[in-house]
Image 1 (cartoon, rainbow, N blue to C red):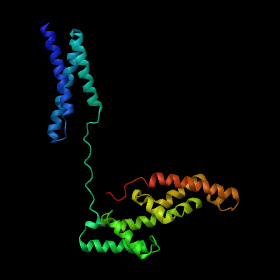
Image 2: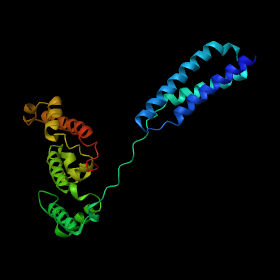
Image 3: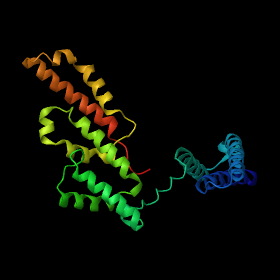
Length: 237
């Protein structure tokens, strides 16, 4: 009887040790990780032997405790033990930059907002836009922001007419620039999706059927493009 109780206690102890190892696991020195993994594997083999040899000698209470401990171990092993990645460091926005850097980028963004190729704002509105931009973005992305805006603005003219009226090109670009995946060739992808639905030759026929087909193709192309091109964090890296 003592031998049976000892075996049950040993089994539970080993399972508890296995559970403790998994719960307290943290990435540290590679050698420590290798050692811990080896010890966990040794414990698991010992547990398997003990369960096979002694399960039929345990009392009902001991079996319940053993089942509970085994289930806890399985739950730990089934979960993701990889530590969560550290949150990204807060971005330093351009309004916190040295005076010279701040002024250079403020002028750059203000000019962009004023020019017709940019936002085409009046001077006071362009100045207000630049001031707000400086509090949201780091100085290092100013050139990229301007380039990406022009790319998105260009593709906005490919949209179906009714949607273009509802969301003007500048606003469309402003809405999507923070989510733009810079590596995507917008014009090429739009064209590819468009032609997968509707032939450009038929779109130019000028009859009512062609125009309706053209609209359907544009809506499809715009939808597919947006699902792949505007799903990133453009200025967080």
